Picture (tube, rainbow, N blue to C red):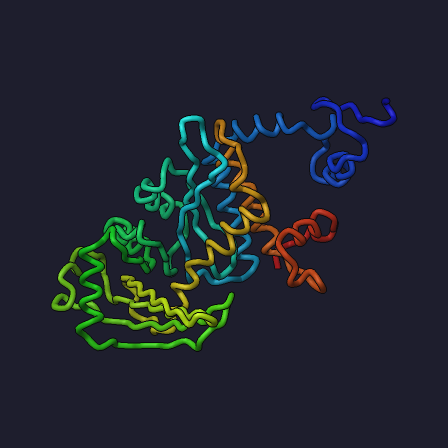
Length: 341
């Protein structure tokens, strides 16, 4: 039996198990004198790690990746994500607020909040921990708050905030401006075909003045209203759906085309971060909840995502899935020790 199994302090591990087969590779980083710890040990560690200290190290690592990539941070997306599997007996679910650097395609930081409605108070706290100067910060309607706009301007950045029903007066005024005044700039993107639909997107930009926009004085250095329209046509049924959204911003230099691009880039955090975490790393199915385990483990998953995204893959792996790239990194000694490129 001793020949078949390896006896470690963490328990009984079969010699042909993935943990045993990767032990030599793992020992290139840590000694693992007593073998690989069991999942119970890892669970206790993740519960006990101090989240703020880990977050500080994570943000520092993200900044180092951005520097190594020699990437200018021009757009930062902020959005929340719910970890549906990490739910306590009482129904309380872990909710994370994330900052995403679209230019580098990496996560810049995260903050745990008690519920989605608490994002309003958490966004300024997250902004305080980030280097946003010179960037355009995009936030959905939940973050369209006067204090948040003031905080972004104070940090020498620009905001692009979505308008919805939670800001009914502001949204109504934006619609009235778009209906009664000619745009200062307009742009229509070429039609795009995707998943059986044809999308026609356009943008219009309106200058904000005290006469046009009565609540302008309440918003820090507000300069433009942006109207984004998406016409979706089903190829077979020819059914047409029109979606019009409004945004406010203190940016004065973007063209209508650039605003259209910026609003579409906001969803980069959903596709490049949240979707990858759920599909590749099964974060949404994770049932970790005790202590700090859910928050800390999510941060490690983002660390893995940032690391893989920072590497240069060649050949058939250039356009491979994130899951395939992760497996390639694990099996390649060169990639394990590679620097961001």
